[in-house]
Image 1 (cartoon, helix red, strand yellow):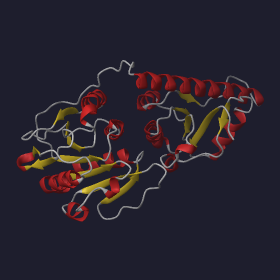
Image 2 (spheres, rainbow, N blue to C red):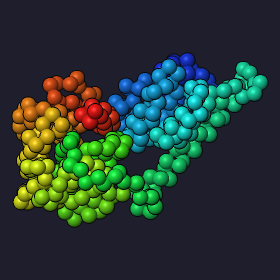
Image 3 (cartoon, helix red, strand yellow):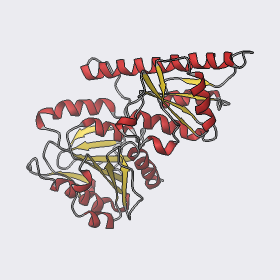
Image 4 (cartoon, one colour):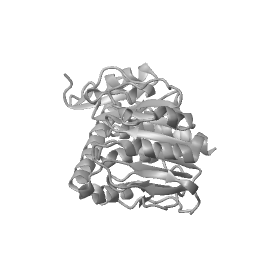
Amino acid sequence: MPTGLKLRVVTDKEVVYRLINRSLTNHDDISLLEGSLDFSQVAGLTPADLPDVFLVSMQDKKQEMASVIRIAHQLERPVFVYTDLLDDPRYSAYLKKAGAFEVLEKTMPGKAQGDGYFRHLGTKLASVTRSAHTVWRQREKSRDSGLASRPQVHKLPATGIASRVAVAVCLDGGDPHQLIKLIGGLKRLEGIVLLICHRIPAEKFKAAFDLLDGEIPYHLVRASTGLQLNENTVAIAPPLRPLTAGANHKTVVGEEIEQQAKSDFSQMLRSVAKEYGKKSVGVMLGQDAAFECEHMDEITAAGSVIFVQLPDNQPGAPPTGNTRMLAGAMLPFALRRHLEKLLA
């Protein structure tokens, strides 16, 4: 059973894992979890397999490091980079902007050789691991206590132009953080509009709205009948009120429904598919999301692609027609790639 801080290595070279394992021999408070992972395995980790900190070191697949960093953040874990692929000094800044706690360049410490090299490297890796974990925990505590002073997210341009691509998001639950993770994973993709149905209780709606508005780069509005569905906008339904896309890309808000009813999910997806056709996308979030939408065949037949969130401990499934079943951490990245194709 590992003791101390658990460190997990993500690499495309097994020799890197052996190098790090040897370097950390004398640091008893750092437990290197057995075996390294590749890019595709990270999102499938179960909660029991998650480390305290990720270390990413790609040698041949440099382009995957930023993706691993983002997935680690989706899993709510800090991550740092150890690599010798820093020919372009701007790439280090790019990785930090993507969310890396630190970027360590793989170089020999002066003329030190043999054990001296491993002691030097081990001290450096252990120090960054401890710091990353401490800073991450402090941020979590500040966020949970409501004391974090987050700067206002810079919003995308409000163009007033009707969006060509629409994303219908159905949240089977009341946790706004799932929406923040999904929308954050789009990485400020311009030119889309998102419509959201949810089960956020009325008494918590204002707090959830304010939290979401402070975290996403899109312009968040409470939907009302006749609202123009413009690009770079998120329209969220009032609590327990159906939201649909009407003629001329305008919203329609229906009468209040029962808490246990889920007909508003399929209504929204069907209306968006009808109005936007192949330029529409559906997203089902929540533990039972896959079972909460009726008329799925009718929706996908209109050209809409439906992304369904699976539990993080459940592997994704191959695409079936216009349906994509993905673990929660992978869904935002797959969704962004699909939206980029629709916008091209």
